[in-house]
Every structure is written in C-alpha cells, then in structure tokens.
Image 1 (cartoon, rainbow, N blue to C red):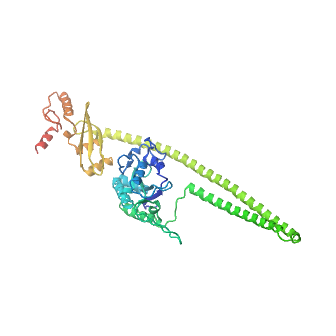
Image 2: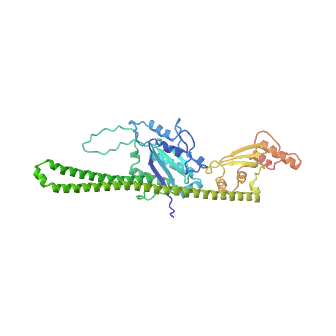
Image 3: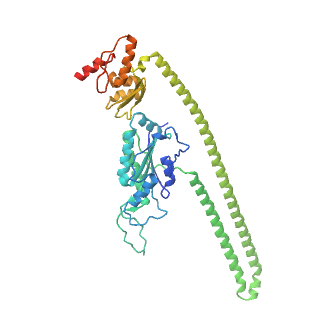
Length: 458
C-alpha cells in the first residue's frame, strides 16, 4: 500500500440553481426538515458546519446562489440552461485527514481551504462552504457562482459578422471550467495543502472515473450509430432500385425488352440486399435492447450485493463498537475503584460537567454540585500540554480540573457553607476559616481556605 497522501480537489457543474444538491449538502430540505443520507452517521451530523455566512435574509445555499447572481451586475439575461453554480469537493486521503483531525489541525485546514477558494474564484463568488464530519472522511462542499469579468472568447469564422461584446461581469462556467484552469486549480490547491502532508496526484494521469450513466450513454450512442448507418444503406439501395425502374419509362420498348432480363436480375439482387440490411438492422436493434437489459441487470445485482455487504459490515462494526464501549466502561470502573483519588475534586464538591470548546486555544468551563447547589466557573488560556493530556484521556476530568482550578475556585459560597456544615457534623465543632468565590464573608473549616486568603494578600 502506498504511503503517499493526496490532496483531492473535484469540480462539477451544478444543474440549474442546484437546489437538489442543497438538500444533501446542508442535511435539510427547503422547508427546513432534517434530511440524513444513507451514507451519513446521524450521530455526527451536529459536527457539520457552514463556514460562509449568508447575506441578511438568505436562508440557505440555493438562495445564496441566486442572491449572488441578482447582485453581480450582469448585463445579459441568464439562460435557463446556464450553469449557475459549480460544486467543489475538497478533502484528502482518508488516513491523513483523520490525522489532521486527531492532532487538532482541522480548523487550520479549513481556514487554508477557504483562503484558496477566495483567492482562486473571488471571495464574492464563494457563496457556501460546508464542512461535513458525518461521513467516512472529513471534507468540504464549496459552492462557487461562475461570475467572470474577462472578455468573452469566441472562435472566429470566415465571413462572420463581428459583434462588440459588452464589458462587465458575466456568468460563464465555461471560463471557470476551462481545461488549463482545471490543471492550475490542482497545482495551486496541492501547494496550499502541502503543510498538511497532502500532495498533488500524478500529472497527466489517464485514469478517469466513469459513472454507470456515462457507460450506458456510450453504449446507446454506439448502437444508434450502427442503426443510422444501416438505415442509410437501406435508403441508398431503395434509391438504386427506383433509378433502374425509371429506365423503363425512357427510350423505346424494344430496348427495354432486350434488357428486361438483366434488369430483373439486378432488381432481385437489390431486393435481397435490402432484406439482408433490414434483417441486420433489426438484429442490432434487438441486440441493443438485450445488451441494455443485461447491463442494467448486472449493475443492479452488483448494487444489491454492495448494499447487502455494507449492511453486514455495519452490523459487524456496531457489534465491535458495542464490545469496545463495554470494555472501556469496565476499564473506567476498575480504574475508579483502584484509584479513587483520580476521580475526586480537591474542593470536595462533585464534578457535574466539563467543557473545552477548542483544544488548540484551550479554555475550561466546569460545573460542580454540592447538595442541590450548582455552580459553574471558567478559566481561559490554560496550559496547552495539559489540555492535550485531557484530550488524549491521559488524565481524568477531576485531575484536569484540579490542575487548572484552585479548590476555592471550584465552588461558590453556598456550596462552601454546605461542605462546612457537613464538616461540623463530622467533627463535632464549628468551622472558623473563610472560603468561597462570591462577595461577602462566611466561615468554613475547609483546609484550603488559608491558601486563598494568602493569595488575596499577595
């Protein structure tokens, strides 16, 4: 297996306003209902993100395409068959993309992709860019409206009247999707992705993807060409027969009678040729239908088998995931019993929840509980290496919180009073020292209160 990790940049013309793809890309229908395709994991769909903010009043990708066309200052009317949007898929080899996610460089990767899109196609033309995390490999679905400002290129024909082209912006997917431009896109995109361990594919490779629809289309064209050729030959033979028969209406009767036998023989040959050609044409038409049926049945069998195999694999993966989850839970339970100190806050409060919004620029938000009293606190710009240990499950949530928050920062005054009351009951004496993060004063017998007072004095 090759260790080369490739950058993937695939451009495709949209159909009309491309509303059909908006549903699949945005995971919702035009009326806002949730839509999850079969190849997506609905438990991860919430991780998908729209990276381009829409203009005010624009609700979705389809409206964003039309908004750009309406506000581009076009001088020519947009035709019904014109391409209004170009879809661009940006990603890389699966192994490297998963590594980018694991080492926390996904945001940096998306920023680099957005910069390349805006530099290449003009920022105003990039109307949508969706990060999809609910499929096998993380990838971007970018949408570009092909507005260009260069002069329209037309082939000059001899004797053709030249018309003056009006300057200004115009809608032209042909300009954006020109062969030389496509090659340039691949080069510049690979250069932008180099820092992420991704490189360009083989230049000049003849490998091309051919869809089932394209294969069928080529087969049909071949059959239709054969049929057209045979039809033309039949018509030509009929014309020859008509020309021979017309000779009987010209010249004298004696000459016609003299050549009658030869003419009859030639006509018989032409009729036989016509019958043969018609039979051959009918055979090709019938063969065409049979081949199409065979091709469709073959592909349908492959599709059914692929679906069946995928379902079996999904069941196997689900079973393995369940086993892994059970083992992980068992390991956690055993670790909690063997090392209870790793699961206790230094303040004595109970940790309810922790949240680190971004491990690249980490901050920590905690929620703690004492009795029925809930408290939350946040610290910003915490130690990066410490956050990475927590991300990689090297330390527990409680160890992470204890390393970031002092005991007195882990609870509020009411919680401290509750812990103090509990300590009084346990020791039989009143608490005397100060504790808490709120305003005012209180007394507690908690051991870290002196440390807090010393910290305030400093």
